[in-house]
Length: 84
Figure 1 (cartoon, helix red, strand yellow):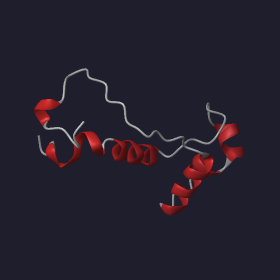
Figure 2 (figure 1 turned 45 degrees about the vertical axis):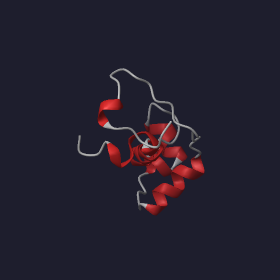
Figure 3 (figure 1 turned 90 degrees about the horizontal axis):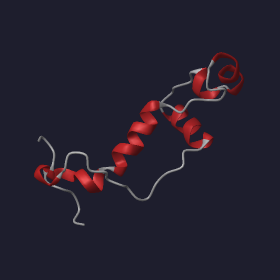
């Protein structure tokens, strides 16, 4: 596969698998929280998350997940499909 695709090369319903994957750890989440000054207890405090959420544990910051997925999509999208 070449690096990046043109807009016309994308297919509706196609599945694009990105390698390598990333396992998000508690350390990754806490580091991102500290770097972005997001100190909400939902992301940082285990006791708070256990008692006040349906998840029962800390929730990973959505912006971190978005950043990872955006980075993984670079080989497929690159500059060829921008502004289409």
